[in-house]
Length: 64
Ligand SMILES: [Zn+2]
Image (cartoon, rainbow, N blue to C red; front, side):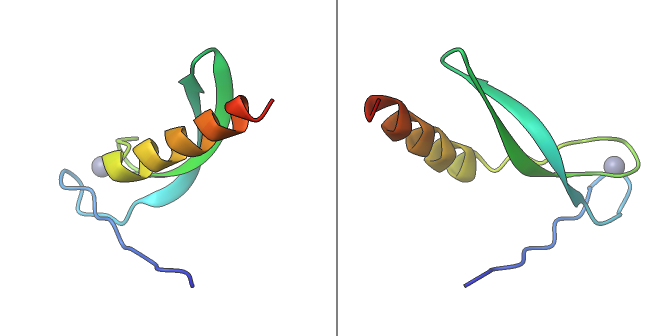
């Protein structure tokens, strides 16, 4: 099930596009598509989503 959420940049009133973003966590680098404004480059960070992603990475690390 894919839930498509449209996120609008408050500044430019344009729809944000998913852009590959590098995130760092505990000396590990991983990539995630974060909604980014094509005009001003503002990134929308969904804290809940990042947290769950972090948790995912954490459990991957623990499995090592
Ligand atoms: Zn913008």
